[in-house]
Length: 204
Image (cartoon, rainbow, N blue to C red; front, side, top):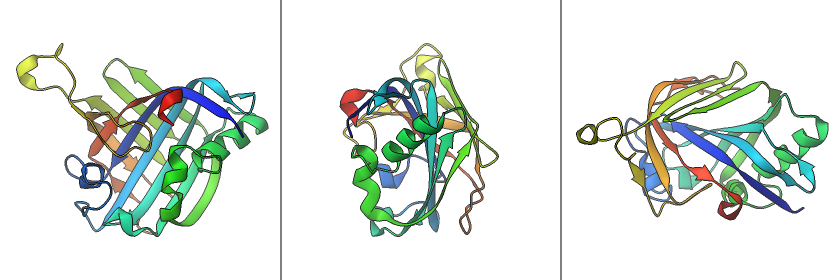
Protein backbone atom coordinates (compact mmCIF):
# COMPACT_ATOMS: atom_id res chain seq x y z
CA UNK A 1 0.00 0.00 0.00
CA UNK A 2 1.71 3.25 -1.10
CA UNK A 3 1.49 6.22 1.23
CA UNK A 4 3.05 9.65 1.54
CA UNK A 5 2.30 11.90 4.51
CA UNK A 6 3.43 15.35 5.60
CA UNK A 7 2.63 16.88 8.96
CA UNK A 8 3.75 17.39 12.54
CA UNK A 9 4.30 15.20 15.56
CA UNK A 10 4.83 15.55 19.28
CA UNK A 11 6.02 13.07 21.86
CA UNK A 12 5.62 13.13 25.63
CA UNK A 13 6.89 10.65 28.20
CA UNK A 14 7.11 10.34 31.98
CA UNK A 15 10.87 10.87 32.28
CA UNK A 16 12.01 13.82 34.37
CA UNK A 17 14.36 15.38 31.83
CA UNK A 18 15.45 14.54 28.28
CA UNK A 19 14.49 10.89 27.89
CA UNK A 20 17.38 8.40 28.26
CA UNK A 21 15.52 6.09 25.85
CA UNK A 22 15.70 8.67 23.08
CA UNK A 23 19.37 9.50 23.55
CA UNK A 24 20.43 5.82 23.76
CA UNK A 25 18.41 4.16 21.01
CA UNK A 26 16.02 2.70 23.65
CA UNK A 27 18.85 0.89 25.51
CA UNK A 28 19.29 3.08 28.63
CA UNK A 29 16.85 2.78 31.55
CA UNK A 30 14.10 5.37 31.85
CA UNK A 31 13.78 7.54 34.95
CA UNK A 32 10.92 5.46 36.41
CA UNK A 33 9.95 1.80 36.69
CA UNK A 34 7.82 1.91 33.53
CA UNK A 35 8.30 3.99 30.42
CA UNK A 36 5.00 5.53 29.35
CA UNK A 37 4.97 7.62 26.21
CA UNK A 38 2.48 9.20 23.83
CA UNK A 39 3.15 9.84 20.14
CA UNK A 40 0.64 12.30 18.64
CA UNK A 41 0.53 12.89 14.87
CA UNK A 42 -1.28 15.43 12.70
CA UNK A 43 -1.37 14.96 8.93
CA UNK A 44 -1.30 18.28 7.08
CA UNK A 45 -1.53 16.76 3.62
CA UNK A 46 -1.00 13.71 1.39
CA UNK A 47 -2.68 10.35 1.12
CA UNK A 48 -2.61 6.65 1.92
CA UNK A 49 -3.30 4.44 -1.11
CA UNK A 50 -5.17 7.35 -2.79
CA UNK A 51 -7.23 8.02 0.36
CA UNK A 52 -6.83 11.68 1.31
CA UNK A 53 -6.13 11.91 5.06
CA UNK A 54 -5.33 15.63 5.17
CA UNK A 55 -6.16 17.42 8.44
CA UNK A 56 -6.61 14.17 10.36
CA UNK A 57 -4.80 13.03 13.50
CA UNK A 58 -3.77 9.87 15.29
CA UNK A 59 -2.07 9.01 18.57
CA UNK A 60 -0.21 6.03 20.00
CA UNK A 61 0.19 5.35 23.72
CA UNK A 62 2.93 2.95 24.84
CA UNK A 63 3.51 1.39 28.25
CA UNK A 64 6.87 -0.39 28.26
CA UNK A 65 9.59 -1.68 30.57
CA UNK A 66 12.18 0.64 32.00
CA UNK A 67 14.59 -0.43 29.24
CA UNK A 68 12.34 -0.11 26.21
CA UNK A 69 14.57 -2.24 23.97
CA UNK A 70 13.50 -5.26 26.05
CA UNK A 71 10.13 -5.13 24.30
CA UNK A 72 6.82 -6.41 25.59
CA UNK A 73 5.19 -3.03 25.07
CA UNK A 74 1.49 -2.53 25.65
CA UNK A 75 0.15 -0.21 22.97
CA UNK A 76 -3.13 1.63 22.39
CA UNK A 77 -3.90 3.35 19.08
CA UNK A 78 -6.30 6.28 18.77
CA UNK A 79 -7.69 7.43 15.42
CA UNK A 80 -9.39 10.76 14.73
CA UNK A 81 -13.17 10.51 15.14
CA UNK A 82 -13.61 13.09 12.37
CA UNK A 83 -12.17 10.62 9.86
CA UNK A 84 -14.61 8.67 7.71
CA UNK A 85 -14.35 4.88 7.61
CA UNK A 86 -11.86 4.86 4.73
CA UNK A 87 -9.65 7.49 6.33
CA UNK A 88 -9.78 5.76 9.72
CA UNK A 89 -8.69 2.45 8.21
CA UNK A 90 -5.86 4.16 6.31
CA UNK A 91 -4.63 5.90 9.45
CA UNK A 92 -4.85 2.68 11.44
CA UNK A 93 -2.66 0.84 8.95
CA UNK A 94 0.00 3.56 8.85
CA UNK A 95 0.25 4.27 12.56
CA UNK A 96 0.12 0.61 13.57
CA UNK A 97 3.07 -0.05 11.26
CA UNK A 98 1.19 -2.48 9.02
CA UNK A 99 2.26 -0.73 5.83
CA UNK A 100 5.87 0.08 6.66
CA UNK A 101 7.33 3.36 7.76
CA UNK A 102 8.66 4.39 11.17
CA UNK A 103 6.08 2.59 13.29
CA UNK A 104 6.86 -0.69 11.54
CA UNK A 105 10.38 -0.47 12.93
CA UNK A 106 8.96 -0.51 16.46
CA UNK A 107 6.52 -3.38 15.83
CA UNK A 108 8.87 -6.16 17.06
CA UNK A 109 8.89 -4.50 20.49
CA UNK A 110 5.10 -4.67 20.89
CA UNK A 111 3.81 -7.45 23.13
CA UNK A 112 0.12 -6.55 23.34
CA UNK A 113 -2.22 -4.22 21.48
CA UNK A 114 -4.69 -2.89 24.03
CA UNK A 115 -7.08 -1.72 21.34
CA UNK A 116 -7.86 0.73 18.57
CA UNK A 117 -10.32 3.49 19.38
CA UNK A 118 -11.86 6.32 17.36
CA UNK A 119 -12.00 9.45 19.51
CA UNK A 120 -12.00 13.22 19.01
CA UNK A 121 -8.40 14.43 18.66
CA UNK A 122 -7.68 18.14 19.07
CA UNK A 123 -4.13 18.78 17.83
CA UNK A 124 -2.83 22.35 17.90
CA UNK A 125 0.34 24.17 16.84
CA UNK A 126 0.60 27.81 17.90
CA UNK A 127 4.10 29.13 17.37
CA UNK A 128 6.23 27.51 20.05
CA UNK A 129 3.24 26.11 21.93
CA UNK A 130 1.73 22.75 20.96
CA UNK A 131 -1.05 20.58 22.35
CA UNK A 132 -2.90 17.34 21.76
CA UNK A 133 -6.09 16.21 23.49
CA UNK A 134 -7.09 12.64 22.67
CA UNK A 135 -10.64 11.96 23.82
CA UNK A 136 -10.70 11.56 27.59
CA UNK A 137 -7.51 9.49 27.55
CA UNK A 138 -4.62 11.88 26.86
CA UNK A 139 -4.03 15.60 27.39
CA UNK A 140 -0.65 17.11 26.46
CA UNK A 141 0.46 20.73 26.28
CA UNK A 142 4.10 21.69 25.66
CA UNK A 143 6.28 24.67 24.82
CA UNK A 144 9.54 24.60 22.89
CA UNK A 145 12.61 25.02 25.10
CA UNK A 146 14.78 28.12 24.61
CA UNK A 147 17.94 28.96 26.56
CA UNK A 148 17.07 32.00 28.71
CA UNK A 149 20.27 33.73 27.60
CA UNK A 150 18.81 34.03 24.08
CA UNK A 151 15.48 35.53 25.17
CA UNK A 152 12.08 34.62 23.76
CA UNK A 153 13.20 35.17 20.16
CA UNK A 154 16.16 32.82 20.45
CA UNK A 155 16.58 29.44 18.74
CA UNK A 156 14.83 26.41 20.15
CA UNK A 157 16.91 23.59 21.62
CA UNK A 158 17.13 20.37 19.63
CA UNK A 159 18.67 16.91 19.52
CA UNK A 160 20.17 15.60 16.30
CA UNK A 161 21.16 12.16 15.07
CA UNK A 162 18.31 10.54 17.00
CA UNK A 163 16.77 7.14 16.37
CA UNK A 164 13.34 8.08 14.93
CA UNK A 165 10.11 7.05 14.97
CA UNK A 166 9.64 10.05 12.70
CA UNK A 167 12.65 12.35 12.38
CA UNK A 168 16.31 12.27 13.39
CA UNK A 169 16.12 15.88 14.64
CA UNK A 170 13.91 16.53 17.66
CA UNK A 171 12.96 19.85 19.22
CA UNK A 172 13.20 19.79 23.02
CA UNK A 173 10.07 21.04 24.74
CA UNK A 174 8.81 21.44 28.29
CA UNK A 175 5.48 20.04 29.42
CA UNK A 176 3.03 22.52 30.84
CA UNK A 177 0.37 19.81 31.06
CA UNK A 178 0.69 16.09 30.32
CA UNK A 179 -1.56 13.28 31.54
CA UNK A 180 -2.71 9.94 30.18
CA UNK A 181 -5.25 7.40 31.44
CA UNK A 182 -5.48 4.45 29.07
CA UNK A 183 -6.70 0.87 29.16
CA UNK A 184 -3.48 -0.76 30.38
CA UNK A 185 -2.34 -1.53 33.94
CA UNK A 186 -0.61 1.36 35.65
CA UNK A 187 -1.02 3.74 32.75
CA UNK A 188 -2.31 6.79 34.59
CA UNK A 189 0.61 9.19 34.81
CA UNK A 190 1.95 12.69 34.47
CA UNK A 191 4.61 13.23 31.83
CA UNK A 192 7.38 15.81 31.98
CA UNK A 193 9.79 15.17 29.08
CA UNK A 194 8.68 16.12 25.58
CA UNK A 195 10.21 16.24 22.13
CA UNK A 196 8.68 17.60 18.95
CA UNK A 197 9.95 17.09 15.41
CA UNK A 198 8.30 18.07 12.18
CA UNK A 199 7.83 15.30 9.65
CA UNK A 200 7.48 15.07 5.91
CA UNK A 201 7.25 12.45 3.18
CA UNK A 202 10.97 11.73 3.27
CA UNK A 203 11.01 11.07 7.01
CA UNK A 204 8.93 7.91 7.12
